[in-house]
Image (cartoon, rainbow, N blue to C red; front, top):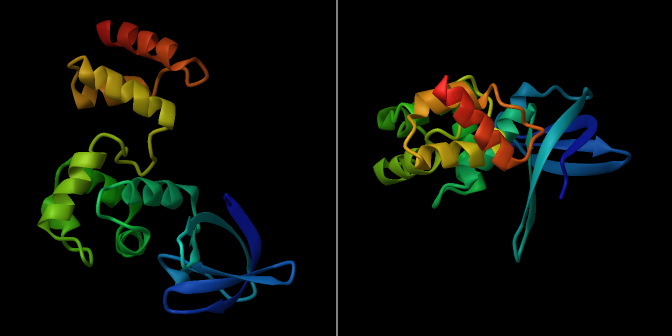
Length: 183
């Protein structure tokens, strides 16, 4: 699995770029290829999809875009090729805000996203993506889910999750969050 690759963009296509890294050209599908410039060096964050008949690389200019992409493809019925246009057409904060506010009309404006899939996105991702565009850390995900199961409100949980020490174990984080909730 690749995390990122650094290289010069050699070709720009309508939905991909070719990135040269030490003489090897990597074809990388990206949400907005025209955000890159030819013969300029970039650090491109990658997601690799391996299928029986093809190996694909999906690339992003920022780590936030990649994290949003990973959250989107975790939604049942939404694959990488459907997630790219969503990221290309919307801002990470706009998409996160629409999901958290259950704005189905906003989500349906993206290609191939109908009512059913928009509702599935809200169901699977609401509260897991912060509205400022940053995706909640995985350990925070577990803390969030635990507090939600205990009956705390989404808004209260989000205000506490950002203040807890992420270096502690999940159990310690939950205890710390509960102490902060009581105050």
